[in-house]
Length: 193
Image (cartoon, rainbow, N blue to C red):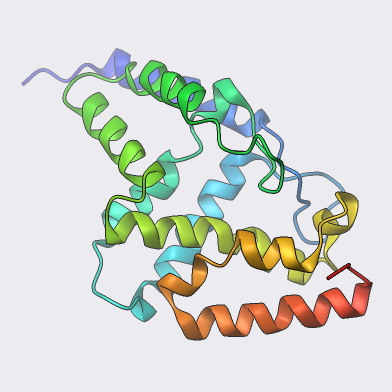
């Protein structure tokens, strides 16, 4: 087998663009917004840290790969704020996924696209776990930075709890802890219920 290094290098060069996709939350202690590449790295490590507490045994490589791939589409579509009505843009994101993963040689391009779709459609236990982790990280960041993005966007406690309730499916005790902290911070900083 002769690897297509040029295609792989082109794909990795394209991934550089993810570093310029700004999100709506600031890293702790910094006065700038995080980028999607930072988010992907951090949730991959959060997932690895929480995998021993998963309800069922999961494939760690599959979970981490999904988390590293899931936001690559933002190179074309930009980041969508989780609480906006247009947050879900599957059709445009699928086009982006096909374009970007299509830069890779087969069968890797097909494998990455399949994993991306599996994540987006929560088709496996690994995908549901990964989606829960993707939801959890911004909540943890907001809990550590005084609710910065929630305050900036007028987000209510009820929205936070509803949007992130899927964390309960990956670990009820974890969700109970996080939910309690969200409610307490909401009261402390004056978020509407």
